[in-house]
Structure formats: C-alpha cells, structure tokens
Image (cartoon, rainbow, N blue to C red; front, side, top):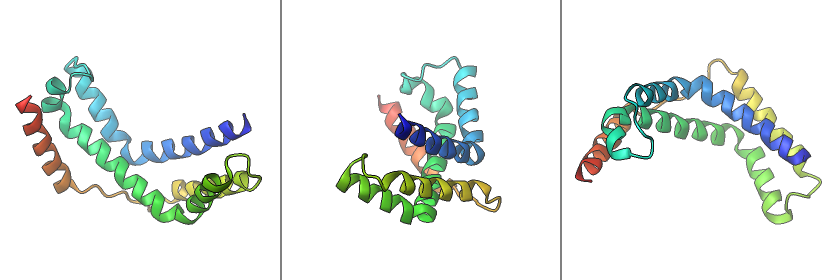
Length: 136
C-alpha cells in the first residue's frame, strides 16, 4: 500500500506540472468536444472540429515528458534500473522514488520552466490526420 501511495504522490506532481503547462490545451479540447456534443469514440466526427486542440494537448504532453526526462533522468534511470533488476521490494527503491519526486518538485517550483510546443509540427500532424480521417 505504501508503494501505491508513493506512486500516487509522484503522479500528482506530474499532474500538477501537466496542468500548469498543458492544462489550457486540455480545457480547450474538452470545451470543443462539449460544445459540439461530440462522442470521443467517434474520431471521424470530432477530429475535423476539435483535432487542433487535441494535437496541441498531446504535443505539450510530449514536450513536458521530454523536459522531465531531461531534468530528472539520473534519478529516473536509477529507480528504473533497480526496479528492473531487483523488483519493487528492493529496499533502495523508496529513496530512489523520493529522489524522482524531489526532482519533480524542483521542476514545479521553477517558474522559468518553459515547455515549448513545435507549432509547425502540430499543424503538419493535424493536417495529415485530418486527411486520413476524411478518407474514412
């Protein structure tokens, strides 16, 4: 149970980072879906209308993960290595997860942290996806 609580704590830190950097894109997409009363399972119907905000949200999430990987790579790699070789019962794992959490806290506290979304790539991806969706 304690390991689950540790995981939830780390997840909440990532969720807070995501909300701060990508939350506007998520809200924009949800608003578009709700406004059009669109079913998320019917991509052919919603993507032409809401695909831009969907792609922006996902591009932002990808950029945020790259930033986390770049800044927190050492503690992430250490914890992943321990988990892969020794399993979740290894006594070192809680401290290693704590180090990941500390790194995430530092990122969250960094007001200068910018997550850059490649808008040209988003436009290209959206245009290609809209063409695919239109083909059915």
